[in-house]
Amino acid sequence: GQNIDQPTEMTATEGAIVQINCTYQTSGFNGLFWYQQHAGEAPTFLSYNVLDGLEEKGRFSSFLSRSKGYSYLLLKELQMKDSASYLCAVMDSNYQLIWGAGTKLIIKP
Amino acid sequence: GAVVSQHPSRVICKSGTSVKIECRSLDFQATTMFWYRQFPKKSLMLMATSNEGSKATYEQGVEKDKFLINHASLTLSTLTVTSAHPEDSSFYICSAKAGSEYEQYFGPGTRLTVT
Image 1: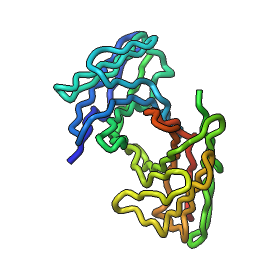
Image 2: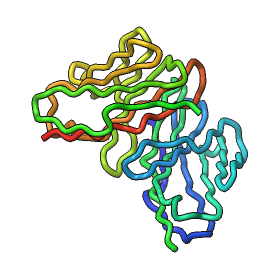
Image 3: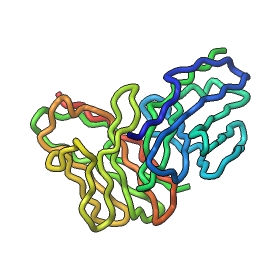
Image 4: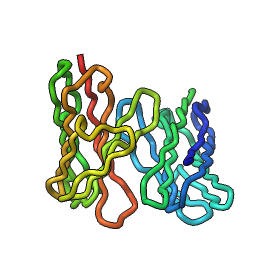
């Protein structure tokens, strides 16, 4: 079966760095996405990785290792507004998104 | 960036009635639209995929006669929840993508409450 695993909840301090991990087992791979979702709102796109390595975009970076079925989202200089759920999703061989359950990130002052 | 709207944002209806939710791509042509359902503190659950002008493809376990999807144009898809029951109460989110692009653009979601 297809499976996406990510931690349920993480807590970090304002101004610090946090890494949210995602491991996956899917039938085929056509890229991995990270989305941010605030409570009661729709997800917003953060990043897309299809090749191994690190993609940096401002305070957010995303890493992919296809051989390990592993990705992480790195958030630097955390701000209170970064408190949200972060969803990892993999596009499988049918170009469908398989979603993880999301990681709720709590930022403390 | 691409914008997707959803209407209504919130709806309360009585059990047994039907509710229609609209999803529109405002500044691009959406060849494919997706309908998701999300329960509190849970991930998105894909309900169906619709391509413009053809019948929607429903995921296993999703009743196509209960959740009617129409993708009549390149900018509009509708989801109709027929004979709604309290267990249909949920957050419904649509997304759209253009052609072979990989990115899906999400609508703001519709909170449905069935009393």
